[in-house]
Picture 1 (tube, rainbow, N blue to C red):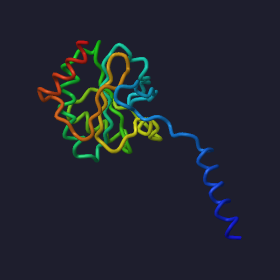
Picture 2 (picture 1 turned 180 degrees about the vertical axis):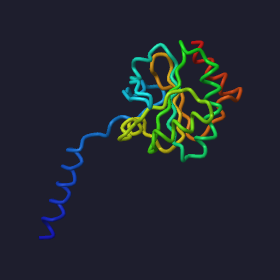
Picture 3 (picture 1 turned 90 degrees about the vertical axis):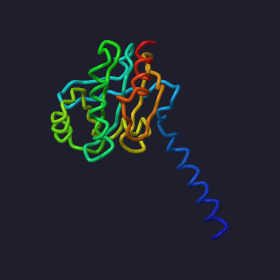
Length: 168
């Protein structure tokens, strides 16, 4: 019996692995960013591939995340400063309530869109490891930068990087 069990268990395991297929590709710097279509808290639909020709600042966040909250005022400064015809800032709410996000952003005067990812499919596509996490996409939709953790987006180095992408 033992002689049959081990080979049989191994065959079943290999079958299960091959039947599952490979996991969906994650966002990789230097590769096209995974496309998505999400609706924001105001009801507007956003499709990433529709934004080609613009630099896209894509930030995953939550209201319960202190580093996320800390970087939001600086993000609003960037959003207000860079030209809207060449730059778009999108935030994707992760494991949080849209009403809380809208309330928080209204308090700080933020005007960028908050997209809802109800089943966290987009977060999964991007290989999200936690929040905040930010991706910078060039005008062709290629992922150029990935930042894990909070960033002071209005710092000179960060602003210079973003301005350079917009100017390309």
